[in-house]
Image (tube, rainbow, N blue to C red; front, side, top):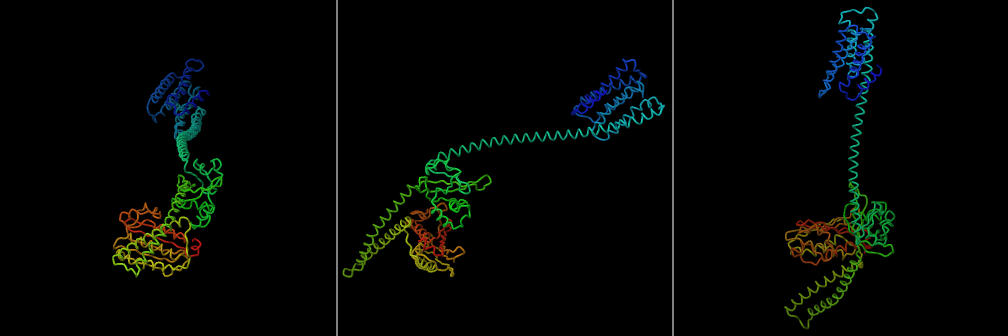
Length: 587
């Protein structure tokens, strides 16, 4: 019997067992009990009719269990199977000796099934079923227990079975809770495993894409052999070095990556001068102020191409044009910088030869032009052989063109001197208000003939500053003259003067309402002989040297010249000149 009860408990605890499987231990026990009663003489069948009824009811319980097993969906009425089994056991006890029957213990089997159902109410059902099974012989036979023992058995046994049912019900409940927890954990682990596999697949794909991207980048970098491409971190330590850099600077990648700084290949004086031009405190951008001079514009998001001198491994120097751009990560944060350098040795030599040629030609032309002008002046003023009115007219035309040609030669010579660093300045005290008034007075007749309104707005608090009065006047005259030429009849040109601010600069602005300059051409505006498309389209006279000369004059004074323009609306030029003595030093 103990073996039978153990088997029953294991079957009941099986995950979602069928009704027939649950009923199998009770069925086996009933069959064994019936066989014992029929085959063993020592086990009498005291009442044949209840014994036969027990067999029929037991068979009915098996059929009922088989029927519920065949149903597609579980039914709450399946609990009828153990209840019917309890009834069969009750009749079996009645037919095999009543209260003295050997098979009373079989009541425990259906009680286990009933008590293992979900819910506390089944404890009461199991207890009530047990009491009914024990007291059924007295109820059917209309008898009264004949002794106190029978009365106690009818009362105590149901309580005992009820207590057993309570224990089984609690154990089943804990088993179900554990099972749900295990199932939830298994589902969570399965979901986590699936997610991990998905992430692993994505990582493999990303890793493959990253490898391909790195291979492509390496291939591109390695294929660039004419230009040097150098990458650094935020403090200038080199982490990218292409074959072009190795060829240009004479060092291999293994020797510099992670070991050398980009500053090792720059001249200290160039970095110091650039830092001074940018006018920011040392170390404001990164730890090294020299590196700040290289990357400050790129750090602020402004693309920059600047001429530098690289120092090779063997100590020789190389002029280069360097484009600097920031390196950013996926979040847009700057992680370093890329320096793309082009060898401009040939361009520098050609430019130097061109400047020398221009200076030579200008000098050679200046002498005969001065002689021509001198002889023209003598012919016009010769009192012994006076000229006729027509001859005076012809000589006047020749003199004007000679002066124009001499001015052009002077401009060419000036630009050559500015490019070669031989730009002379005569420093003296300059009153900015006088500069503007003289320029306005000189340009007013031209503006009146062109139908352009000319106005000035001067801050009387502007203080004198050191500079070359003649050169600064030439710069302002150039800008005012250009503004008038580029402004149509009915337009206006205004010249403004603002006193020095906290940065110690005087600002002079020349604004017009003319044709403007295309945005794509602004960066070429200060190139020699360049003329904007709006100028050529409207047949504005000029050769493209005025702005070059103006910027050279302003920079020689340690100042800046900025321009902003909207095509069709007008242009504004802004001169920012220092009020301290650095102008003299700059000259």
